Image 1: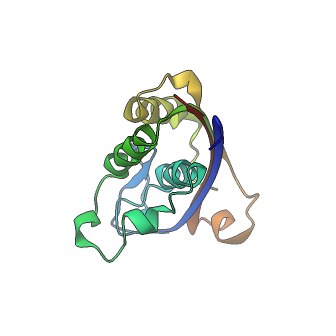
Image 2: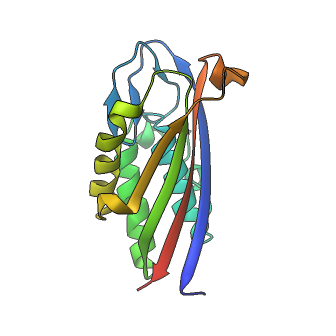
Image 3: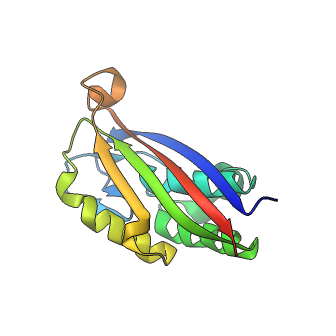
Length: 160
């Protein structure tokens, strides 16, 4: 294996009533939340998929099957810490993460610093190693109609 490994992740969930909106482990005040088996944190899910992909360890569905009740409504930050353990077990460390949340609404700019801090803390890295951006889809598609939120992430790992 190379000394450097890159991984890419993507996730998308529908918005629904009677759920909290959790992004990067942070509850964002909004009248809708994301539908999913766990807390449906699309940003954390995309980051976990990037981490797993960097080392060819499958995806989050393989490690945390949606039909397994142990993961019902679980915090994705707990799952992220587990995936971090797999990275460390394989002899790698995180160099940096670049991620983007795709959401027409709510506006996320004011929550980005807290989201970065939450992710950096869970991953035991400096906040300057975590980039979180937010964008809209210019009212196109389900995201643009306010029906869903997606996230994508890229991660760089280095052999310890």
